[in-house]
Length: 594
Image (cartoon, rainbow, N blue to C red):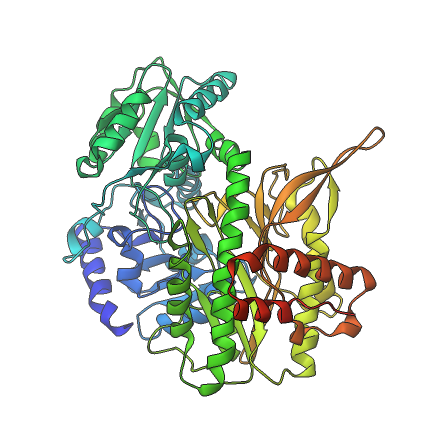
């Protein structure tokens, strides 16, 4: 696979020579700064062979490197072999970052090029300052993918559809009005919306344009007197047209957005999220711009009561599907007839039998033994390990239901767990439980709670490189801002109505990986006269922890009671959806720990 990309790399270098470009930076994103992108924009993958969701390629006339984070170190090492690219580890202190590397390999007066349609305004401005400080020239209209990629996939053409208000919980017209009020409060008259999940939430529109996320490719311009959706004509069904007309929204072709922005009145004040809007679109506006985080991000992260109830019901159906999946794994693995890909296929099959299921919310991570140590491992026909009746299996999976999004990780033993496996599993579980039972004052951010999940591991000089928790959308992106739980400061308070993951882990290269994940709803807890309001978490995810991997001697009385209470809730809510055999299996898995 990697060798197949070598001609692509040389084609790019020929294009660079024709345009007097000395280096090109290729992010793994699209014009909407999406996490998951459709094949049409996977130019970085085409050039390098690397397929992870986070990674930036940089190509000079004689060198090439790709930067990615700790989730993908092992994957990138495999995929980049013989590709002409070397891997650079982000934020690890040893490898140079992109700017440092460019300083090392380029001469003064070199030309650095980007596709400004794919670079957000913030990063483009940062790169422009870097170039100015180092005597480089920046070109932002270098579009090699448009000419050197002969079999480039077309943009998706499936129609959009309306997300029913009985699941969304609020009419699109009311959401637009709330957005306009926020704009007016911030002295803006309009907003350019480019994030696909923002558009989907605001307009109650969904689509099938991106794998795992039910969004439609579009841009939106929203003001009091002018509301335009830029979208391919073939996506507009009669239902969607009527829905948009009711919202007073006109439509124009997706590719018309730059021409439209160039003609916006100079008297407008347009809000731009510099981390989501591209450099090309930002600079097309001839009017005043104000820069700050998309207010839609803050509006949509607080789930309404209809959405919250939807999450709860989706978790019950998802839990029932997982009972059937893990029961099947437990019964079939000892025969040596299934592998990691079979587990993903079976999981999709069982979830698809549930009401309101649309698709998985991400590619299942099913890692057996040493594959579990690859944080974002994705099994293929070539790499998939066969399961047997021993060893640890990590399964991270989720689904998109019309009434909610799920994301769960469970680590189980397939037989004969070692004392070390049980010890490590229990350390991770202790951190997971500590975060889940946290009570904290209003105004608390995720980084202030992150230590709760890491402390049991830190006490034994171990840790994990990824964040502990990310926001989750409602029938939208499985990874959603603005809140997170991680070591570095993200200055966003946790608020009632937010849904956030809780997923500490431990990864031992060549041995196994352990991760335990639930989704948590932030709820109001206590109101005090002296100390203000306190918040807590309600676990939404419904599936047992593997009792065979728990070292009871490491748990406190409080932790034992917490596990028993959680398992009691799981059993009560999932059992009505199971047959007698499945219910008996669940009862055994949720039996009380003494």
